[in-house]
Amino acid sequence: MKTLTVLLAEDHTIVREGLRALLETTVDFKVVGEAETGLEAVALAGKLRPDVIVMDIAMPGLNGCEATRQILARNPAARVLALSAHSDDEYVARLVAVGALGFVEKQSSGALLLGAIRDVGHGKAFFSPGIAKRLLRSQQKAREEGVTDSNRRGVLTSREEEVLQLVAEGAANKQIAVRLGISIKTVEKHRQQLMNKLDIHETAGLTRYAISVGAIDSDVQATTF
Image (cartoon, rainbow, N blue to C red; front, top):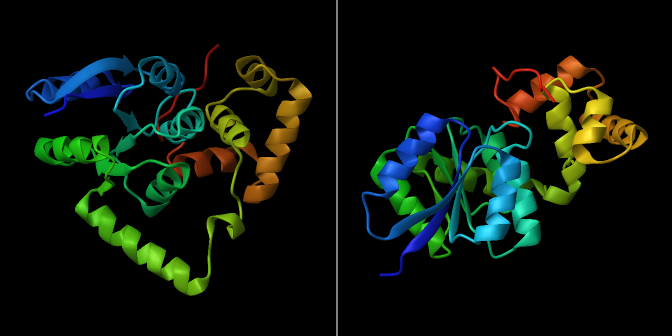
């Protein structure tokens, strides 16, 4: 049996250590790296090229959804399994849209998670049973209504997603410009575009939206630089 290499992307140390301990109970997994932030996950995924990336969703600086999008943009063959305490349809839809191959709730059993990693590692999609049923119903409804990703209102670009998260974390335009390596005017442009797309025109509303779609945790602290 082939040993699957795994990258763990999770900002909570105790959870990450628990995941590593779980994977070390089997002979077919090898943890090759650990990331505490989305930016670290993107960098390590490119460097290590693991078979599976187990990706938490709510991480500081760059959330798991955007990290997944960036990883797959650089390496379309990468296989990402999302792991989250939240499994609202919006969370799942966002991860599927950017290319994640599976989604497992943190409340799931260890056995289910190990099975999910195996399936994703061999190129199969895997979703927790409850999520799979809801996803199927959602896809059927979308087909019946003729809704596609391209005609949904409010689809954000990768850069707009990054700006949204940093705004929601409390960063000012100048701080965002430094973090992303772009001009303040460009930040202002992206900020206005995402506000227009979402029809949200104040920072508090953007923060609430970011929390609702899993871009940040509800207890996130203001960004420090």
